[in-house]
Image (cartoon, rainbow, N blue to C red; front, top):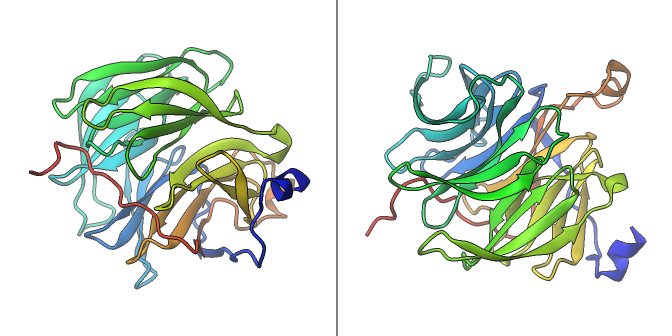
Length: 312
C-alpha cells in the first residue's frame, strides 16, 4: 500500500461493496450493462449460463448455455456475440422468458476438438467490432491469441504470444486499447484506430505484483481511469491514464474477476467473483464468494458499445 500512497492514492473512505446476488458462481465473468433493459448481464464460465440482474426490482434470472463461455457483447439487432469453448457464436435468447434454451450459430471455430481450449475475456471496440482472447485451461503456454471480429464476421488475429488474455477496455476517446495477460502479470496499452480497428505501438501500462493479485477483468470510466480486478488479491483498483494507482477498493472475496459500470447514470460499479479454485476451508471464510457485488464508483463509466456497424 505504501507504493500506492506514493503514487497519489486518494484520501477518504472507500465505497463499501454490497452483494446484490449471492450467486455462488464458479467463475463469474463479463458483466455488461444493457442500457435498454436497464439491467446487468453476466456469465458463469464453468456452470455455463447467462445471468441478468435487475437493480430496480432486485430480480435475478438466467438462461442455460450449451458450453463454457468466456465473454460476450450485445448485438445492435438483439442477442449476443460470444466467445465460447469451441468458437465465436451468435447467440439469441428470449429476454422475456428466462430459463428457456438459447439458439446459437457458429461464426468462427477455434480448436473445437481440444477440451482444454476456450475463449476468455472480450468486448466490443468503439467501432462495433468484437475482440476476444483465447486460452488453454492449463495456462502454461504462450499459445493464446487476441482475435478481432469485423462487422462482416470476418476474423483477424491481432495479437499472439499470450497465455491468458484479459482486462480489455478502451479509453474514452477510443484511441487506446488496454489488455492484460493474467499469467504474465502485465497490462499493455496500444494505439488504436477507431476507424480501421488497427493497433500499433504496444507498451507496458502496468506491471502487477502477484502478491497483490493478478490482473483480471477491467473497465474504463469517463475520466479515463482504468479499473481492474486483482484476482486473488481481495480488491480492485483504479489507475490513472498515466498508470498511477489512485484508488483501492476492498472486496469481501478473494477472487473478484471483472467489473462494469451500470445503473441509469453509469455510476454503479458491478463486480463479479469466483469460487473456483478455492478449497472448502477458504470458502467457509468468504461465504459470498461467487457473488455479484455493486458499489458507488464516484465517477461515471462509459456506455458499452454493441456489435455491428455504427448507425449513421
